[in-house]
Length: 288
Length: 253
Image 1 (cartoon, each protein chain N blue to C red):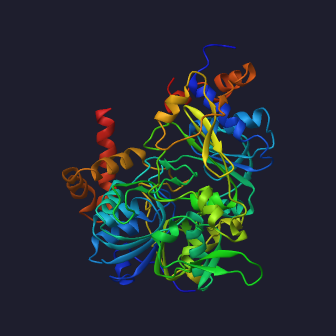
Image 2 (cartoon, helix red, strand yellow; image 1 turned 30 degrees about the horizontal axis):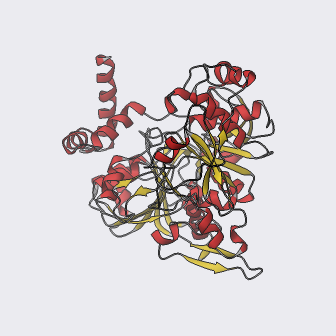
Image 3 (cartoon, chains in turn orange, brown; image 1 turned 90 degrees about the horizontal axis):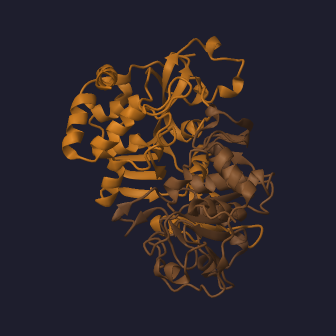
């Protein structure tokens, strides 16, 4: 079994401009934010991003990395909307495929199964059909029903963040919800797993085998990135950093504030980011 | 009848009535008043309703309002997001969602305002509305009844209305089932042609007020008066379900 561990800095060896990339998690939950921040540091651009979007979408849009977005929604959960996503939509700045959430899952499932499409009722007679003119319906071969044929989505690379992984790429979630990270892995040519902690395989926890979400079959590289989902949730290791998320959303609404945010948090490497976050909280405490 | 019953409490009772007869299904309630109403329904006329914590747990005893199972309650099952889409496809679910726009046939928009290619205002996206409305009963909750919400025509059809469902022409939309629209002024339902009409006006609300706040002609001729919660319901709302009166943030008296 090969050692697939990789330093964060090597991420862009796997990602080129113009690729279709999947980003796991859900809204502002267990997003592979360290990997996203590494993308921000790179010159990769012109991406098609496939995701249940959170601040990953906002950050990549603000940095001009996204050409097209395929999404079930974009939300920060405790803050309804990501200001960067709103701004780029309202300027008509990106191509979008806005799907019903269930349709989005069907697209992932079909992609994972290497199927052209999966049928679903969701989307019939809604504006989703007009907003996505590539969508077709299909007549049932068995009765007189008709369904939306959701095309399978395949991605060049998926980025997911899980609580624990071993060096070979077996990865485990310890929180209450797996989201769809295993589907992203199966629907992608390559999958990069970032994890809070790389542990020996025997420590992955045979006592709770159902937490072993992703097999190494689907993993190409493992990046150890403690606090790597920050500022989104990574239950039970940590919850969402609501104070920081508020600061992110407020800064995103104003160009000067956003420049200050990027200078302070996004101009250095991941260690500099984590140090700046600690400093941010230390200052908040002093002010309190 | 107590005269100090608030408008929010009238709305909670009206929403509670919407769950009546749903049986053993997953109650999907978006917003504070719908959430309180599903809990009230479970404690009174609909004990079989299945509630969630808003995250991935189904709860036989719900957590404190606005908090997840981590804050308390009794977990009875596990329904991570991936399972929700399977559950709704079975039909064993009943939604009460919000709406940024609704038209006379119950088409609902939560996606964006203006042309979706370059919206004047990007909202939350269609989310689950297209799938919910073609798979199981869907009601809408509007905290502020206004002509900005009740419009002639919605900008992005997220939840499917009766006109579109009826025009569809195959059996694939046979589970389409719009129930009621409950607002801070009235309870609306649909006539035989699938058009919204006023079923009842909340106490103190006039027909003129509702017509004024609705951006299309609406039939108020058969409207009664919305019932007020009884003493036991008031006790449950005030002492058990929402002792901090969070409901008053959504509906002002």
